[in-house]
Length: 168
Image 1 (cartoon, rainbow, N blue to C red):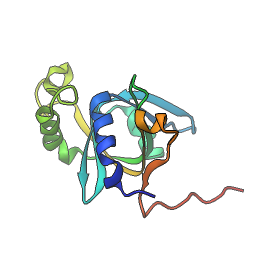
Image 2: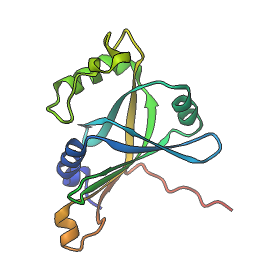
Image 3: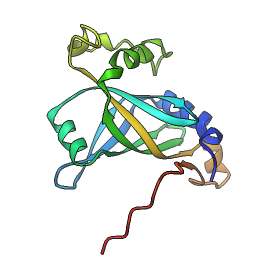
Image 4: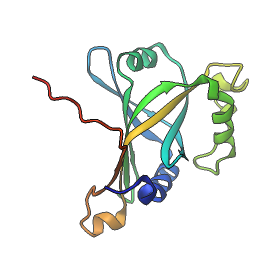
């Protein structure tokens, strides 16, 4: 199994080019629900950490309180994909830092969150909230991988990931 460092360049490139990820949560009745969100990623201690600036809606709060596990998928027209399985948690103490990450990133990943009307007054004045993503698995498929027949062979998994117990 590769280290995250072995796939991080492709993962960060794909996620920065595609920008928008389909993010799935699980509702309180165990049903999946998807939405399109705009994560930004950094590498901390050789591990990926994701951040999403979002509104803290009652529906997102209920879903994440019932099950903090999320799945993210990026797809590009070049047939390149990246998939992330992660635990999400609210991290509003990071609002200013994450806001500045988006402002400082080059487009199309970077943007000024103040251009979104509910967030016009800045990271601390309005309903701007932050989700922290802590992946346990990241998988990439580049166009070169697909052309070489290496379908979904490149992935990273956290050493602390434990398989789910089988259910009787």
